[in-house]
Amino acid sequence: MAEKVVLAYSGGLDTSIIIPWLNENYGYDVIAFIADVGQGDDIDAVVAKAYATGAKKAIVKDLRDEFLREYVFPTVRAGAVYEHKYLLGTSIARPIIAKYQVQVALEEGATALAHGCTGKGNDQVRFEHCFQALAPDIKVIAPWREWTLTSREDCLDYAEAHGIAVEASRTKIHSRDRNLWHVSHEGGELESISNAPLSTTWTMTRSPQEAPDREEIVEIGFEHGVPVSVNGQPMAPVKLVELLNEIGSRNAIGRIDLVENRFVGMKSRGCYETPGGTLILSAHRELEALVLDRDLSHFKEAVALKYAELVYFGLWFTPLRESLDAFVSSTQNNVSGSVKLSLYKGNIAIISRNSDFSLYSTDLSSFTMGESYDQKDAAGFIKILGLPARTRARLMNKVKEGLK
Image (cartoon, rainbow, N blue to C red):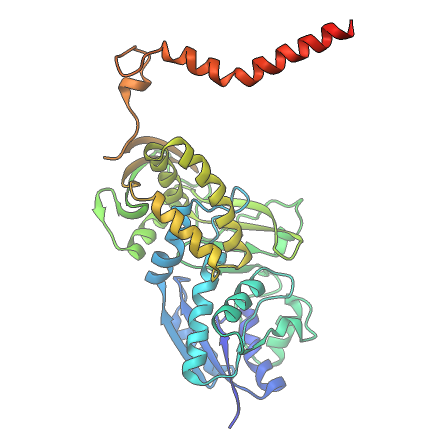
C-alpha cells in the first residue's frame, strides 16, 4: 500500500500540477485537503479537479466561521497591521488551514504533508512552522524547493503537457489569494515597482472613479472588541463580513499597493483589497480611542506592531502570540459600542462614536471652564515635570560662566 500525503489544495496553478508531480516523483497517494475560508470558489468543481488530476481522495472543511472568530477577529482586537498597510489577509488564513491539514493527516494515517508555496515566499514559513508546532515528526514536501520548474510559465508548460486545465495563462499571470477577509495580487505588471496596477488587476473593489457619487453611511457595532452588528442589525461573523465587503467594495474602500519586507529578507510588491476589514479596523480604532485610557492605548500600539509581525512571520502557534492574546483580551473588556462611518469614493470619515464606557467628558474637554478641572493645579504639575530641565539648564549656565 502506498504512503499517503496530504496536500493543501486550492485548484490553482501550483497545486494543480503538484498532484501529478507527487504521483510521479514520490508514488504517494495524494489526499487533497480543501479548506473553505471564503475564497468564493465552486468547491464541487475544485474537488472534481483534484480527482481528475490524480488525487485519491479529496476532503473539504468549511472553516469560514472559525476563521473569522478565532483568527481574524483577534487581529482586529489587537489592531494588528503589518508595515502600516497590510491587514494580514493571507497571513492569518495559513494557521487555520495548516491546523486542519495536520488533523486530516493524522486521521487518514498520512506520513507526509505538502504545500504549493515557493522557496522565496512567506507562506512556506507559515505552513511549516505550524506543521512543526502541531505534528513535529511528520515529513514535509515542498515541491517548489525540489522540482526544476523556475517560473509560472514553466508551471503552465507542465500543466499543458499533463492535460491540466488552469485559469492562469501567459497573459493572465497574476498570483492571487482570496478569502473572506481579502484578496491579494502579485506578479505580472506588479513585479516592476515602476508600474501602476492595471485596472484589471483589482477584482474585488470598484475604483474611486466608478464608485457612487454620493456618500454611504454605515454603522458598525462591537462587543468586547468584536464586530457584532451592521446598521443596528446583529449578524453572525460570516454574514457580517460579507455585507461589509459588499458595502466597502462598491465605495472603493480597502485597496492598498505595498512594497513589503518578507520574512526571508527580500522586499516584494503586492496589491491587496480588504474592503470590509478596512471598515472594521477603522471603526474599532475609533472606538478604542474613546474607551481606552492614554497609557493603555499607547502601550497597546507597541503590542499591535509585535502581534502583526508574529502573524506575518507565521508564528501563530507560539507562547508569545498566546500571551499577547491574553493581554489584548483584557484591553477589550470595555471596547463595546458603535461607530458610524461615511464612505465616499475610497475615503472614510468618522460621523459618530458611542459607548457606555466612553472616557470622553465634555465637562473636562470643553473650552468652557467647569468645576471638574482646576486650572491652577496645572502650574504645580508643570513645575514638577520641568524639574530635570531646570536643573540641567542651571548646571549648563554655570559651566558656560566658568568657561568665560
